[in-house]
Length: 482
Image 1 (cartoon, rainbow, N blue to C red):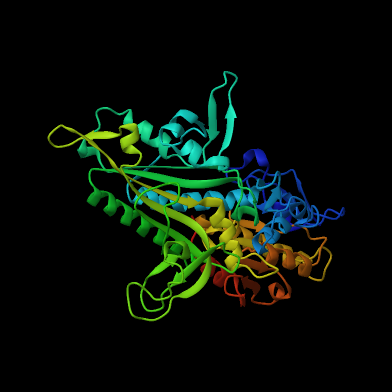
Image 2: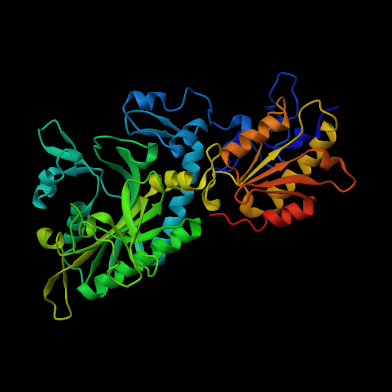
């Protein structure tokens, strides 16, 4: 008898763009793993674990990194074990499909917050003219941190680690800019390049990475500081939505420049920044901004500042006219006279946020994602092929997957079916727990009861529940996606 799970899925050619792995699903083909087959093209698409490109055991994790002199950490080890990243060159990685899904979700969240305060997205060249950097005097200041190259004509360039020069030049070319058009907030999310002398900790400190950088242009210092505060508040909302505890700390402006700077730090033992935090007020600072040996809070008499370590995931700068004056980025004021714009710049480490979240939320053996960033929200684990009740379990699996895919629009493309039914439930459950799906649904013995029950493991809370299909649909119907 043909198993009912044969009715799940459809051919890849019929799939929507987001549904990359959609096949006819045959439960138990006699050759080990279940496989896609042909049939009706009118069934519900389903994503199959056997078709996900997520190689889990390519080699001993960290061996190549240690040979290259890189330091490893929990997030690097877990992400490589899970087939989320794979090392290329020192400080450079392949981002595998599941990681790209998580990163795209993070980008959508960032877009929402940046556009919510008036940000406009653009894309600037990665290949930056050395002449611009010489004009700002950063060509020599940045030193070996720049990846430098020459074209066939002997003209010098660098691969952009940041884009203050480029964006200011762009705005300076708009000769008719009026004060009525300000503030302007321009941002991009793109690859950045820095020649780190000692790349380490996987995506936490690499040579090639994704970053969001925003640049603001205002009519006055007062207006620029207002913009600065609005961006910092947007950062706070972003990290709150991700469920990450992030500290805003007073920071050094470094080679970016400016007179006001803050870092956004995730507290973590492997963090490279030393932080001093007051327990009595909101004051927090990077140690490098305070006088040596300073232990008392400069804002309140609460007592000594507590030390901790942090991973920097964002940095904001009030730049004043440092760049706009050099590149003549002006606007016409209400008297129609040219005035130099007041600027700010604001960075978020996109891939660093992903790795830092894995670092601070995961156990030693299993990845835990911020709920909104999990590559897939739900993993359904059907019975082992040939086990007692496997046919009835297959029928229950079919009904459940159809209910989730068809009845919960937000979960379309977010449910995967572990079709590797040649393996025991326990083996597949171990994989699902290690990969960090927020919800794992096991179709076990309880599915054969008069009122079928499904084992539901909520990984963020470490809870296990036994729910009817209606209860499960109700629970997953409240899952937030982006």
